[in-house]
Length: 137
Image 1 (cartoon, one colour):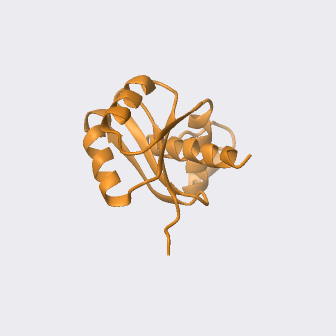
Image 2 (tube, one colour):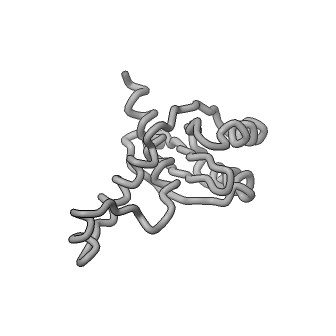
Image 3 (cartoon, helix red, strand yellow):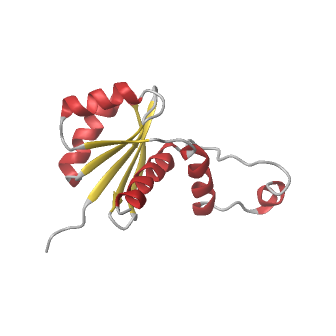
């Protein structure tokens, strides 16, 4: 039985990159944030383990250098996606997955709450999701 296609969303950055491995039905397999210095090694190890079918790269900060690295490694085809507003959407998705409790929940009604952790991995998921939603249209 053939496996579902796997898509790797990447939110590029100068110091760190978000990764999201996503199935065709938009179910995340895993989310990870990796330092840009470890990018090449992590990408190769990930491909060896999952053999993803397509890399979806956001066109934000540092994307041209990350795209060049990806193309040099040459594991999988690459498509570029405009990543406008993905950080805002990533924070919203993070809040859905990790709802506030106690006083933080009460305070969030009067003050803007941002996650205490980086959400580059969630941004990578939003990038992959954006591609998957639009590829069938």
